[in-house]
Image (tube, rainbow, N blue to C red; front, top):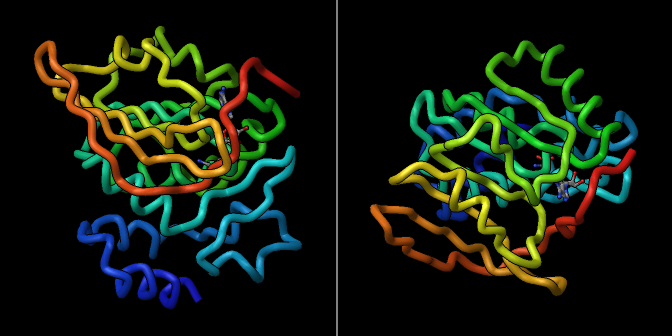
Length: 206
Ligand code: SAH
């Protein structure tokens, strides 16, 4: 089933970076879902993970990951740990991952999953991602996996020169995938299509 999912994503032709497809081939997505949804784990769909949140659609995970152009040992900040699946994809590509989740229970569940699967190099934090993660900045890459109603200035401050931010931006049901590349004093902005994420919300929650 996992091979069929990865083949579907390959056939659709939006992912050229084979390392991402290889990583998704290695990761048991079913382990990141509640056991009552396990049979759906290899469909190309988002799924509920509790607290009205979702594990992102596999195609979306692949597209966001590709836009980040991950290199081994990149320090990557992820806002919105959710299930932990996206963090696992980044870790499989050799990134050192710092991931922030505003729901304590989701952070704890993801941490247990990632530990039991043997992932090292993923650091999980319970907090409000609107602040970024100043104590661990600067990052080579910053990924937002919830719909951002605005683009906090702190993300640019916590990004290294040459770094990349990938963020679904918009207040409504549909957001635009934006990519920002920092070089010198300049920020280049690109658009990469429409997506639909759960909203980024302020403050920590249980
Ligand atoms: N990357 C996740 C997708 C999670 S959905 C995965 O692979 O499963 C988005 C997540 O962002 C939700 O878990 C939500 O609780 C979290 N989130 C929303 N606003 C946030 C904020 N301000 N700070 C941290 N996490 C946030």
